[in-house]
Image (tube, rainbow, N blue to C red; front, side):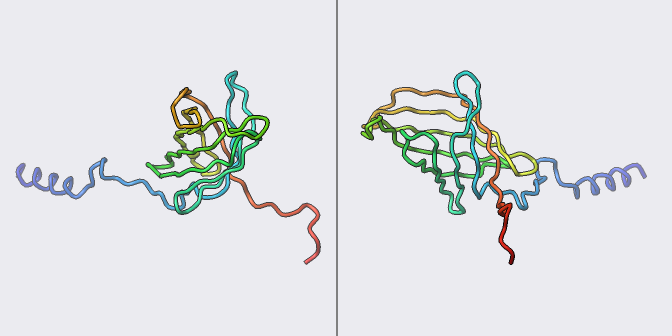
Length: 158
């Protein structure tokens, strides 16, 4: 009798998926869209940095608040549940508009559970005009919120 009970228990357990086989529902999780991005400076102050768009084809583009930067262009990839990586590249210019460097950022993004914001940690690589690496700064913290469509406050009658 004990053997039958043991076989029955083992048969029931064999039908249960292993914890490692569980899959997380990623329905409706998407980084695609436009985001308002803020970064922390060296002193920890957070300020507006850029407005960027994650495109469905895995590309990224943004407009930056710094006039010495070219538009930021990059690529992104989903790596897990609400986890993404992003690599961006932009050019820098002096006050006369002369090209004087290249900046690459490697960024890890973690989307909030409500999917309306994300936190990021970036590594900034500063290069000279030939692409020679001059400086690497890790641990740059950021935060972004999804940009929503807003109706005008004084909308004309329809």
